[in-house]
Structure formats: C-alpha cells, structure tokens
Length: 95
Image 1 (cartoon, rainbow, N blue to C red):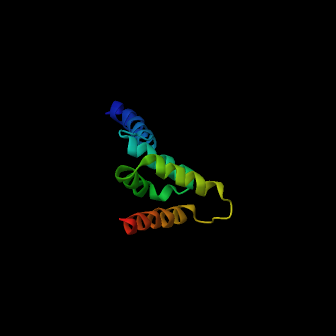
Image 2 (image 1 turned 90 degrees about the vertical axis):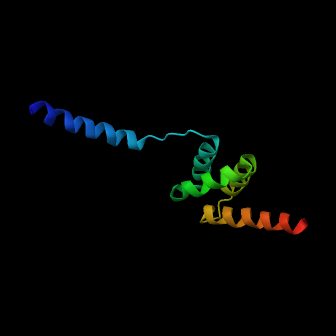
C-alpha cells in the first residue's frame, strides 16, 4: 500500500506534464499554431487550425504577418478574420 501512495503522485505529475506539451500530427495544426503566435491570439487555436485545413496555408500566414507588422491594431485576430473573409467575398463576386 505504501508503494501505491508513493507512485500515485509521481504518475499524476507525469500526466500533468504530458498535458502541457503540444502534439502536432498534421500540417494544418502547425499552421494554426503558428497563426496564433503571429496574431498573439492563443484563445482561438482551433479556429485557426480549421482555417488552415480548408484554405491555403501560405496565404493565411502571409496575411497574418502583414497584420502583425502593423503596430496600431489592438485586436489582430479580429482584424485578420475581417480581412480574410472580405477577400473571400471579393473573389466570389468576381466569379
């Protein structure tokens, strides 16, 4: 019984440490994480991963980097989404 009490806290600490590490299995996940870093918006990781899965990753990153260069934008994530969907509307109008 003493062994279990000794092992249990070590095991719980190990599980806690595992949860803190990021596991990336697909390229769109990496792109989504990169977008969260560029736009300084960690609360919307899954949103950016979904965008990366459905759209061109190079275009997403290029737009995010242009936005990140601008210092006067308070909410870079919201501005990014506004420009991204405006671009999609412009393309659909051209068709």
